[in-house]
Image (cartoon, rainbow, N blue to C red; front, side):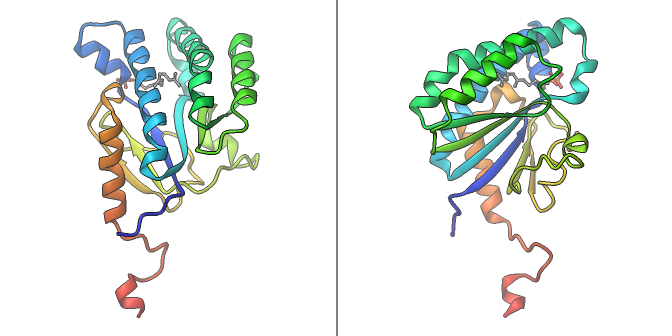
Length: 211
Ligand code: FPP
């Protein structure tokens, strides 16, 4: 099977809250476990032929959540960036945060800038984190990313939720019932196996019919 080694995988990380509720834990515990899953997937991706990984951490519509949850998420993002930067550098991961920055707390903006600067030389993986991101806002502003090959959504819902609408024009879609904190390297491998088993036609004919 021909396996491209320059895939762009995008993930809508859903299900942190339900993962926590099922364990009788506060939602914040689900988000912390979600951050561990982020680390696992970022570290597994290059070995699975993924050249670019874009994770949806916070949508422009997530501001509608209770202020305490929003604040906890912002602190978690900043802490994660600060504590993970050395590992990202060691693993050759180049981090970039996409989305609006003008509504983010100053400590998070500072953590983003420091992490982006420190990881700028990474060549093993382009890791993009979407924070305060809206595809409907990004498209008219021309803030476009490379085409997505595989879009994964965890948590059982089957929708795009304003994520990379332009870039997913020909993406293969993969939905899993797994809650994001349970998502592991083997689950990324399962999704990639399903992806490689599909025939992408981009509007053309199947290879056999095209002669
Ligand atoms: C969706 O679960 C998840 C989010 C809105 C936040 C994404 C955040 C993380 C994965 C945590 C850490 C990320 C980084 C980059 C450190 P939900 O709260 O919508 O879950 P639910 O649908 O079960 O309520």
